[in-house]
Every structure is written in C-alpha cells, then in structure tokens.
Image (cartoon, rainbow, N blue to C red):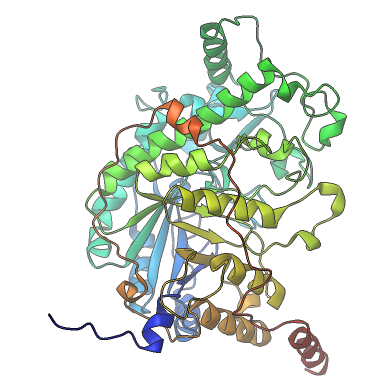
Length: 515
C-alpha cells in the first residue's frame, strides 16, 4: 500500500480558506430592466477580481423580471450581467428577491413588487402584512396568502415556484458552467425569513421593539382556527404589545404584565414563529424541486436582530417571528428545517460588536451571532454570513474575521469551526476609494488565511455536488425539540488573522489628514 504524501504547509493553510463575495449595488439592473453602466461595472468587477475576491452576489428582483404581467418573464438584463461576471472570472450568488427594494436600512433604490400584484392589493389589501392598527406593508406578500389562489388563479407559493423554474430554464448555461454557486431564496422583507416588524417607511426607528404583523384576515382566521383546536376559542391576537418605537417595559405584553410568559402568550408566540417557519419550509421545498440536480447550494437568510437581545423578553426578535428567549432557542429549529432542504443558513450583523451599541438598546450582536452560528453547526448545516451595514474600518473587518473562524486558523488543516463563506455588503465608490480598498484587500487576504486566491473550491473542502432532493418533512415535535437551549461554542477573544488594530487605525487617520 502506497504511503500518503503528507500535506504541505500551504495545503494545510488553504483548508482554512473562507471565500469572500461582494454584494453588487441594489440597482445594478434598473427598475426598467436595463444593465446600468456596463463599462463602469466591468472596471469595478475587474478590480474585485484583482483583489482576490471569489465572487459577487446579486438580487434578481421579481419586481423587475415579471413586471409586465403574470408569467411574462424578461431575463435579458440579468443574462447580460451574468455574462459580464463570468467574463471577469468571478463566481455568482443569485438571490431570488421576492421582496420590494426600498423602505429598509441602506435602501437607496426603489423597486416595488410587480404592478399587477400591487393592483390586486388595491381590491384585496389583506395580501399584505398588516399591523394591529391596520397599516399595510407592501414589501412582501403576507405569508397568509401562500396557498390562496388570488393571483390570476395562482397562489403566492406557485408564483415563487414558477419564477424559480423560469430562472433555471433561462440560466441553465450559467448553472451548467458552474458560474452560479448559490441560490438564496427570498423568504420575506429584505429577503429574510421574518415578518416586516420594523419598517422604516412606517416610522420605525432603532431601537424600537417593532410590532406583530398578523392582523390581516387570513392570519387572523388561521390563528382563530389554531386557538379553537387547542380548546381556547376565546383567545385573540395580542392587543397589548405596544407600537413600533416602544420599549419593552412600556408594554404589557413584554413588560409589566409579561403576557409573553403566560399560557396564552406562549401559544401565540409558538403559532407566530411556527407559521413563519412553515412558510420558509414550503418555499424551500419548491426551490429544491426547481434546482434539483443543479450544482448549487440553496440558502436562506435570517436577520440579525440584536437590539433587546440582552433583555429577558427579546422583544424585537419576538415581533419579527424569532421566538428566542434565555430558555428557548429560536434559531436552531430554523437550522433544522433548512437541513431537510440541504440549505445553508446565511446570517447578518457579522461586523457588529457589543461595545459599539448604545447601552439602552440592550444589544448583543456578538452573543447573537455566536448563538445562531453554533445552532447551525450543531444541526450539521453550512453557515454563511454578511455584514449588516457598510464598514471600511479595521475593527469591523476583524470582527467578521473572528466570526468566520471563531477559534482561529488550524496549522494542521481544516479548522474546527469555519463559516462556509462571507458576503461583503456592498460594492460602491466608497469601497473602491484607495485607503478603504487597501484595507479591504488585506481583509480578503486574511479571509483566505494569507493564501493566494484559490480557483478550486475542492482544495478548501467546498464540494458542490448536484442538489439532492429534500428529505421528508420534519414533524413539528422534532422542530420544537431543537428549541432546547444549548451553550454556544466558545469564541476566541479576537481573530488571529487581524487586518491591523489601533496603531494601524491611527496611521490611516494621519494619512487621510495629509492626503
């Protein structure tokens, strides 16, 4: 038997490599379905490639592609974009963006849902998420209409299914060529599996607790049916949970009365979060069928709601549909649901540190990231992530690097804990400004464990085989078993692949003064 050749130092280090993608601008394809400034974009993509970036991520907007009418898809501009990305030697993560662009943090572009869908909403406003005072939110179709044939005979889920099938048919050459490596499936506002509980366009301001979004006729009826089945036909949806910008203590639901801890409160929160999870499960089932056999990874995005995380009530998470408390894990059941579809969990707010947050918001971004990533790893799924806000400073990059490899690099090969990939938000003139881009290039090198760009994902154990069929449905009992809280994995205090610290920041400042 032939002795195996021992791995070289570089081969051991490449096993620590975490690929880095950069999110393209929101309006790279315009609302009129045209590829903006192709030459300028090509120049920027080539700069990213030269900096060692592995690929880019792009929103594929439903509001653009199917804007002309039901099943009238126009993929032309996106095909031009994908062709350009391929020519520049980058990989592509495509988001099936079934939400509106505009009205969320960082949104400077407005791309509404298709007009023919908004027209249906004129006569049937309950297709949109609704808060207790009756305000409608047009960011994303209310999950209460997932199975209601209100859209020229189709249900919301059938609309998403047909869109993904059409994407596969029209982008089959890019899928076969291995350009598209991830399909992230939009499951809610901002593409995240959540309720639109904190909409800026309705006056929400950080760190408001947000509001429950289930007061349309469809979800009201579903709740009534669930409560009646449980032997409590008298139970109603909460009427004491406050408004968008309240603090938890100022409400009866989260504060003085602690309704959330009563039998009725627990029943509501379980129903609210399970309904959200079923929504994600059903659409990922369709995504799995649409892309079955393609060499891609499916992914779903979970929002990093870090404010009030350190309050016992976790109010902002609860209104968004994450039933997460000290004695109940709200994220591991989502990871378990994703595992049945062979899907990745993509999480936000990787760059944030507790010390940067105002104390009165009881924010805990570091502990939240630790909890969610640990839950994903415990459920044996891949976890990926992104920063929530654009950052160009070393502290932000160092925090992302720490989360990408929480126990540092391993000199003996693959590290114990390693994120599957990180997507940096986002490509802009600010990022490409000389000082910022120099720091970013160092960040890319550190994400790659000080190794050169590696075009072969197999070398760092990223095997993208043909997508397998979803496993059988997981019972609600099995999902709820994953709510049992577990200690997160330990994290190092700081990354061993730093892009520089306080001294480097000081030198950056001096340089910027004398420029």
